[in-house]
Image (tube, rainbow, N blue to C red; front, side, top):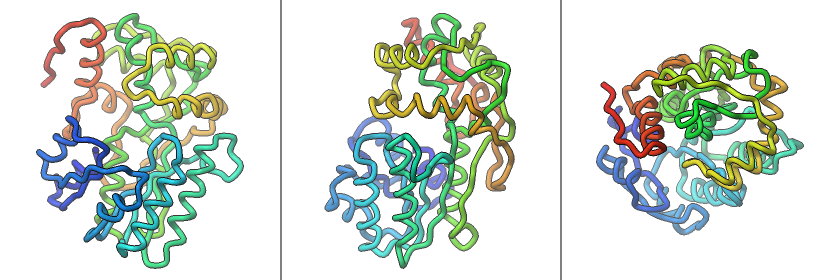
Length: 299
């Protein structure tokens, strides 16, 4: 959604492929997007969605049959002579990674790169800032932010926000001459520790929040029982593997490598209202829904 909104802000025409007409589709439509409702696994739908398009953003869902989705996307893009594609990949994608989903991402990257008439830009993201919100409700209610990320004082990730990722994708899709054939490893500007993230959450929520390192098994049980808003069975099955990568420092890299719109630091990503939608307001909404109160507005 963020990529579409940023492209619309720049006055580019956007056709958004959505699964259903809900509040998110209504937001895109009100911003000026053409809405196409369809089945992302159905080739006939993807063909019609891409008809008349010149460039496309490939963002595979964290869902079953990701490789099937990418094949449908690639066939439709080839038939419609799409000129340039930006794909959201993973740092960890390798042919022998223990995660099936990650192995499929690796294959997706190579399938897209084999298209003879389209150029490709790959955006390689590690651990998203949005991942930390999977257990936001206990932080809002109890002041405990619990994830299996290891020592709370050790900075092992520089997480980019959804808005930052969208800025890179939008920049790449609007300027193929500059970005075609390139792979970008996007991060935030600074490595942060779990304790720093918990502190930023506390400032946004207006209460103390403490990070607690918990076993993976307990964490997965809690996710299945409480089911956060961004929950999916398939994402949870991968999380144990990714948490292990996180603790081993696989994602410990930071820098401003892509001079498009810059990157916000952890406090801005979690605490500061952003031009394209406030993460702090999202936190307030979570807190309000957990406590059955109306969320206060944030200027």
